[in-house]
Image (cartoon, helix red, strand yellow):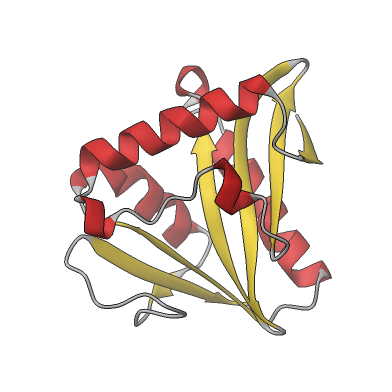
Length: 151
């Protein structure tokens, strides 16, 4: 698997992110949906990576700079056909390594609290993320959980 910084211009990435946003709309009320669209992901404080197995896009993930020592994991997604195959673990390990390389001391994330998100909860906890209070601009929300990892 190769993981590359992506400029979000390819149709495959747009399709994977559209699938991601569709799932978020189906599982979270509008006021609790924090997934970013293509335009939001193109902001300068965000670096976006795509993961490929050969020519096949198999996943994506991003880091959003919150401040000099704190970043947020955004837009983690595995292609439906590749779930359970280690793509998310490989991507998350890459994001953590990049966060360390960039000098961040803390990595945080928001994800849904519904059963749909249980595989994500297991993944993040397996990598050492622990519950935390809402961070950045987030507010307490029964539809969200907040996790953090000290690097």
